[in-house]
Image (cartoon, rainbow, N blue to C red; front, side):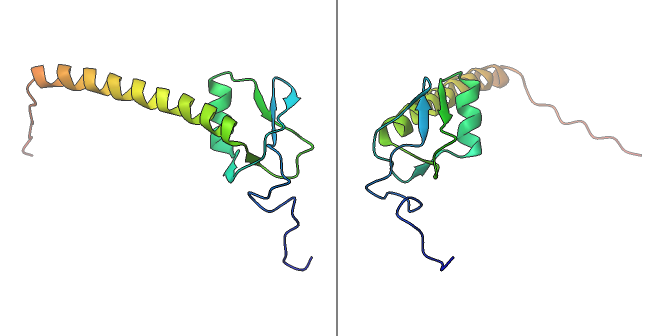
Length: 104
C-alpha cells in the first residue's frame, strides 16, 4: 500500500454508487460524501426502513436521496421529542420547585 486511495475508496468520486440496498435492490444513484455509519444504521433499524449496506460494497458512502430519507426520519424524531419536551415544561411550570436541605 502506497498511502494513496483508489477511486473506489475516495469519497464523492464520480464513479462510486450508493452502498445501500433498498428493499434488497442495490441503489444506482451516485454516492456523495455522507457515510452510512453505525449510528445511522441504528436509526434505520429502529424506524424499520428497508435499507441495508450491500455486503459487496467497498465503501460506506450513500447518495443524496437516501441521505435525505434518513435525515427526514431523524428530523421527525427530533420534532417529536421537542414537542414532548414542551409538554413537560408546561406541566413543570404548574408545580413549584422546592429545595430541601438537611442539617446533620
